[in-house]
Image (cartoon, rainbow, N blue to C red):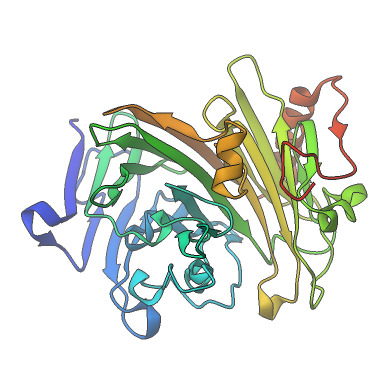
Length: 389
């Protein structure tokens, strides 16, 4: 029962399969039904986008190699995760002008369940002293296509994986390579994102990375709650401070709602593992994220509960750094340094919760992490956490 593998895209070999399908028929020793289906989207701003649908028999994950190996949607039984962005995607990067003058072009392609912000920078646009844009909003990796994509299946473990390689590099500047694997097991209600970021240069490099995990209706609704094991909580802005008393609870869609962002230091177990949960108001559906605070020491909650037509959404965001201007994060020592050839590893395990019992189990796990520790909640922005203090 040796593992099966197939290459779907390899620029070095001039190989690109516009459509491809791998099923149990290709791996007869696989102990269960599964499928991996690649297709190329057509029409509008989707033109040319590669989409890979990974189905483990219980959970389906839609992966977008063209958009930095982001995850567009995920489904498990009745639970359909994603959000209704006013951007109708997935959008091909050729239609996203990251370096438009306001530095906000990134928003023209933003509609995924999971996208990365980085790698050279994330946070708001940064300009030099002469007003020239240095770093656009949230960086370039989410709009960088993979140049290699492979699918694998391991009968011994029951694991199916899609791996993509994405470069963010340019002459005379940083040269970073993301190798991302979306992995799942047969009939399991979730998946893992396992990333390696390598500095392929002979010069030192710096890395910023944030995982933007975005959920809207139907899971997000009035009364939906976020559960996190809080060590420290800081509102990013005075606007966020206005909602500090109900930071963990979401309201109904509200036209004109101005976003509220909260920064966290989380509690973890002895191995550095922590967990966060978004559950619906009735507590019978949710999604949990598990990750290591040693790899991703910051956590951000983004509440943007504006009208549904305008993008009713909340974001759960494990990160290396806070999404502040890059120079500010450098001053605070929150930008990761990679030596020549050095690599950094990151993993996030996502579980789709489709019953009151599974939601309650996730809440109990987070309560155990919290234990008897009293959260330190700051009523206003704090100077070394945010420049808006």
